[in-house]
Length: 431
Image (tube, rainbow, N blue to C red; front, side, top):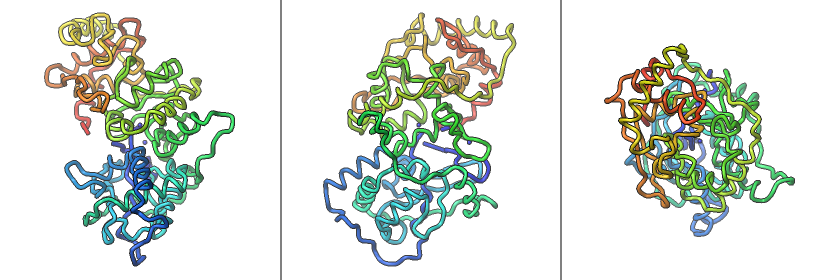
């Protein structure tokens, strides 16, 4: 799903990607009395639908602290502008959304305004959620009203001036926010439109996979063309360029399996995207995941990913790194990924002809060698194979060497990696 400045605060500090924190501040409203839903919240079918849609939006990722009560908020979200804390979405009258009406909730989703009318920071992806239908928003509301109320005070954002002034968001909204529910494209199939609705709306995939301009707004001229997730230092690859993770030449079944299980014959997901699959996508129906795959595969493959800051090495040093990397790969990596780089998919993904390895940005392969990681544990892949970390075993140059080797071997067309870039990523956060 992270990859991003100024007062806009759309720094996309995802958990990948995924559901970003809505700063709703439920307890701040001046309205009194417990809201009554237009549809009874004991309607089991409606609540079940709302729970499914909340999963599709990955609400739990930001609104549940590890080990804490579900949807009670309190998760710190560091941004370049200060720290925000996710609010309590349980139906507690004093600290949650117990006094919110359906209209209040829909307004937050659709217009980016809280119950008291104040503007919401765009780290809450109302730019995407505005596409969600009223019917679906009401179902999510019914589900949230049905869960256990938790009395947990919301934390005030720790943001310096001028970022603590919400009125400053008026200009940002004028430039970058267009209110309106998703409108089906009559020239496309029902399946394609369902996928577009999920990807553009609740899935808010563009929040990470689209670069952010100098004002903190999404660069719509490069929609889905990739971007670096700020502060997390993971690169969300382009979905529109086959030089990166563009899906135009992927088999539809491989895209579907990757989204649903986290692994496929073409590769595996790690980092923020692994959390998106674990928290959200694995719980979606096969039909919905396939619809998303159909839409993603249809994205035009003519947009180039934006240029990324990539430290360059001399040709001579690159040749030295390549030779050193081959020795390290032979001693450390062959058992899982094979001498020919084809691996043993889906457990051990291929490195040969792997677009995520040879992208212009080498951030992700560097981080995988340094920190290791696992694909998500899902119903169809409950015991995923993981990769151990090598940060304590290999020096900066050794990591640069082995990453250079996998980026430039077996027909891969990557470029050498600088040891300085490895050093810069050693301190990147793991969460």
